[in-house]
Image 1 (cartoon, rainbow, N blue to C red):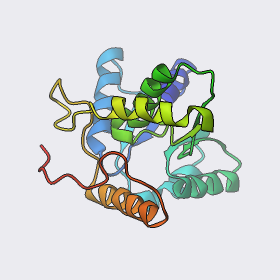
Image 2 (cartoon, rainbow, N blue to C red):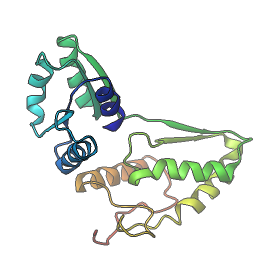
Image 3 (cartoon, one colour):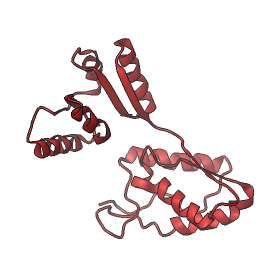
Image 4 (cartoon, rainbow, N blue to C red):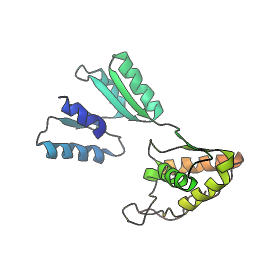
Length: 203
């Protein structure tokens, strides 16, 4: 939010923020923070409108441009509406970013970076590396380093200092991830670490 809100406000614009419907508290907190920092209430407006009402907002003549961070499907709809009204649109959508490891790489360092890049925010960040592409000559050694890195990721309450891996955002995301693991195994993949849904109850 801040990467687009700050420059827009500094350029003299007012920002209308619709946060994800499942975490409206984040949007409220951002609204309060900007108000507290600026002493003004005319820089950012937070709205809790339903997703179905977004098209009407985009069509409003007071809206000059729009930025959206989210799924590819939702991004298509937003881009379509912006195109319909010839409005500037910047999208940050889900990706499948690769991490390439070559034979001459520092494999221990590469594994540490890959583990952090993949597991950032519980693996739920849109900027997290999604695929690791490793040359055959380095694969076995890199895999060992990566397993060493991942095996010390302690799962638990994200508010506890020893926790390195918090929970997924919603049960349906957990179920979808587990289904992907099972489908991969059925397709011939091998599980080297984990692979099952933890039985522990979350915080």
